[in-house]
Image (cartoon, rainbow, N blue to C red; front, top):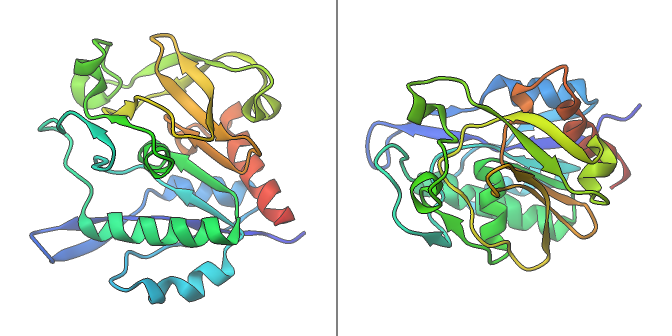
Length: 236
């Protein structure tokens, strides 16, 4: 069976301005796509938009991964324990996203990636949801590295419920930022117990965002998120 090509965005580490030392990608993203039957292709952070043309031509789907702090459509200021996204990654993410949207390939946004997509649709982002919404920590950074798990409710009759089922499910949590208002055309498909948007989707289901990290939940129902992306991509 054909393995659709799924692009996976990367982040960067730098020692100073214009001194990128390495690109960074958790291998769990690659493993999740491969298990789902896709062909993972790592999207490089580049200096020129045209450099990505050959990559975009290959893509049947795209994953925008977790990362640093979103700076677009932000409410409040980033806290000291969340560095802003680098200009290089921000620019590359926008290029690959816009090209993928033009090509109409399915897109999955994870954590930072979900917030990034929401901003593209005109939605807003809490800079520090724990402070701004007075909720318990959603990031291990705020609990001395302790793993955080919590329940979320998947909205009935959403595309996500067609993949996972409606009802309550456990997820992990690594975020400091969170969605404030959803962008036009996006609909919430999952909510945490404290009322935060934990997932959204476009009306046609070709864009999906999740606030948690399904790639770090192998052998659970959340692997189906990648199955869903690969299945749609195969039909593109």
